[in-house]
Image (cartoon, rainbow, N blue to C red; front, side):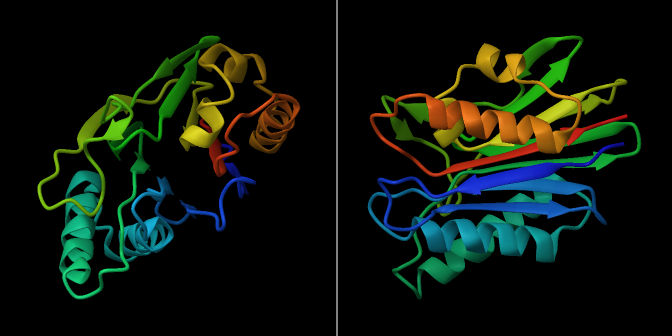
Length: 206
C-alpha cells in the first residue's frame, strides 16, 4: 500500500491559510479541514478539528468526529474567536475504508480509470449547511471495500473550484507524490478569479 502525499498552499486572497490536514500512518487516518472564512475563526476551527480528531480517534470514525464537534462546540461557548470548519476524513482498516464528511470538502475514489465522488456536499445556495462547530450535525458516513489499485483523494474546494473531476483524473500518476505535484502545477496554470487555500491528500491502496 502506497500511503500518501499532501499538498497545502495558502491562497493569495487569504490573509492566512485556513486549511488543515491530518496524515496519521499509524492509525491509517487521513483528513482535511477547510476553515470557514466568514464570519471569522475558520483557521482556529480547522486546526482544532484536526488536532482533536487525531487525539480522540477511537477506531470509530463517525463517533470520533461527533465527539470532536462536541468538544469544539463546548469551547466555542467560552471562546468567541472559534469559528466553523468543514471536515472530510478516511480511516483504512483491513480490507475496508470508512469515510465521514461535513461541508463541501470532497472525497474521490479513482477505480478502474474512473473517478467518483464519495462524499456528500452540505451546501445550499453557496452556504454551508453542515460544518464542525454547529450544535446539531448529521455527518455523511459510508464504508467501502478496498479493491486493487484504488486511489483515494481528499481535498478542499480550493482544488475543485479550479479543476473538474475529469481533469483531476487525467493527472493520475504512478505514485502519490507525482500525482499531487501534477495537480499543483495544473492549478497554477489556470486562471483563478478567487485564489482560495488549496489542500489535497492522495492515497494509493494496494
